[in-house]
View (spheres, rainbow, N blue to C red):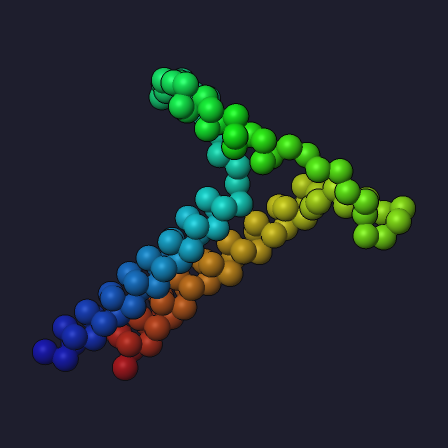
Amino acid sequence: MTGGYRNLAAGLSVGLACLASGIGMAGFLADSLPVVSTGAATTTRTTAATAEQEACSNAAYEPQLHAPLIPGSRDDGPTEPEIIRRLILNLIFLEAIGLYGLIAALVLIGT
């Protein structure tokens, strides 16, 4: 009877750890990667109200000119190798959560 509970606990630890890892990856990738949409799948109707809302929302995204904090320096944001490095490191750390669940399950079954 205790073997069944051990297997249940091991399965829950793996399942919940991988679920948490997957939710973390989905959230990270949703925030990190730009959304690519072709617009072929959905069609939208523009009315006068939505056109006015779009005009107001586009006004907030106008580029603002500002001086750099350190004269002579430019901040163009992260370069592509930095973005790839951050992406890989974050995915490795998120995947480690699922691996910890597997290790916990092996310990639960082994005892």
